Every structure is written in C-alpha cells, then in structure tokens.
Length: 286
Image 1 (cartoon, one colour):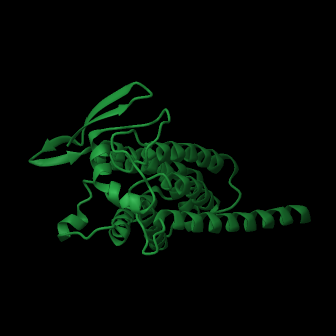
Image 2: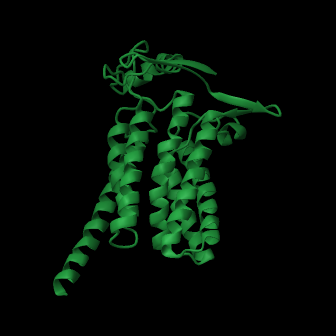
C-alpha cells in the first residue's frame, strides 16, 4: 500500500500510503478523497456560475448530483466494458477504491443523465451544460492526483525532467512488459516513466482557467463551452493517451480514449465553426 516515489531529475522524493486513514474498520483511500474533493469544488464553482444566469441553485444542485452519481456509474461501466481482463466477482466490478474508471464514460453519462435531470427540474440545458463543462475541467484536474496516490495512469519510459519511478511503476511494468512488447512498446521497469496523470492534471487546470474566463467574459452562444471542452480535453487526451501503458484497447487494437478523443474534437470543432459562421453572417447583416 506504500510507495516510495522519486522524480530523480527534479531531486524530489515522496512516501505515500494509498490509504489515508481508517474509520470504523473501513480503509479510506486518497483516491476517493481526491475524487470527492474535485466533485465538491466543482459543485461550488457551478453554483457560483449559476447566479450569473439566475438559475435556481437548488434545482441545479439536483441536476449536478444526478449527473455526478450517474457519471461515476457510467465511468465504471465504461472501464469494465473495455478492461483487458475479466472480473472474478461482482464486488470487484463495483469496487473503485483501487482505481479503474474511464473518464469518457463519466463525461458521457454525466451529460446524458444531467440533461434528463434538467428537463425534470426545468433548468436551461444550454447554460447548465456550459457550467458543467467548465466545472468538469476543475474536477478532472484535482481527481487525477488520485492516480498519483495509487501510482497508476503513468506512461512509458522517459529521460525528461518529469520522469517518475516507484515500486508501483516498477512492479506494473515488470508484469506488463511482455504484453506491451507485443504492441511494439519496449519498457525498462527500472527506469523513470512519464507521469501522465500530472500532464493531464495540468492540461485540465489550464483548460478550466480558459473556460472560466471565457464563460464569464465572452461566451458567444449556449453550448459553446461544451464544444470548447470537447476540443480542449480531446486534443490533450489524444496525445497523453499515446504515452500511457495502461490504455483501454478496442478489439481492433486501437486505444479507446484516442478514438473517442478524435470524434469529440471533430464534432466540437464542427459545431463551433458552424455557430461562429452564423454569428459572423448575422453581424454583417446588421
């Protein structure tokens, strides 16, 4: 449960226990704490943004709770569907304390069920979706540090300044080296790896700042932030996913998240360009 983590080129060392503490015989993991922290802060920011559009905060909170819970459920289902192994028990399938959620499943589930909740609670879907997209970025930036605590979601070997190594990375690469070699990925378990969780956390943090500023200063149309989210996150995820050693793979051998990323980027760009062109034409007529 304990990892001694090093960033040799930065001269940094950490000792992290995946278990934060125990309460009433139940072990509480940092993974869960960080996911919860990301969700809580996202909700607080979402409620703050709701004031700008006179959205009933109680109704929006109901929408967020429904979308959030179902997002986690769908994220787990997504991961199980594409996991390169079979679960032995139902408990193994629902136990996420050791990690194992597919963020794109969470995004899809959150927006679908959140949209249905908007209809139920009479909340404007366009505004709610833009608020959600902005807050998703913040939640993802924080939640990715749960992967750091678990020492998962890392990449191939690297000599870069950010290279990371621990018992967790070494043990995993020793187990996975043969199967990775079949994919043409050669790894040395005793060498530092890309901390891809860190790359994605920073990418999402920057994305959150960009979306938040744009939302509050210069939003052009309802749904714009959703499209910007799809493009921003999709571009980053495509390249970061290419570095990872634990990607979910389709039956054709392609990385699931890269396929979804490409689709979301294309769809997001098409919708953005279409709406921007409409706004430009309208402006010219006036």
